[in-house]
Image (cartoon, rainbow, N blue to C red; front, side, top):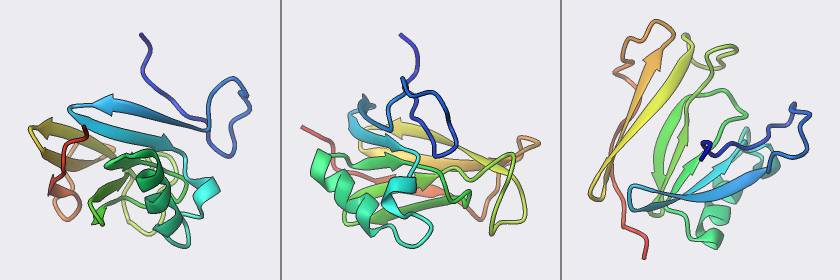
Length: 128
């Protein structure tokens, strides 16, 4: 089965969904590019969408700003950008690892070096 993907605001492929909800490591994950939720201005609509679909983890982009933060029990992660980083001096991507109810988010730069000032370990409630 191919990995889940979502369409961004500059993608032409209309057969790719704008968002998906998938199961991963005992969590319910909302995947979205983020442009429909105004993520450059606020995370509130994105958090509300996660709560609406029962997701406790959200993976999004659009702003190109690396981020891992908990908001009302929802872990919101933006990997940043390898091609066009913004508001952070280096290109980044993120790797998530789950163990039980813990998710570790580690950010890396384009050379594969860990970016220690980003990421962290977060405890989430498992989804039913």
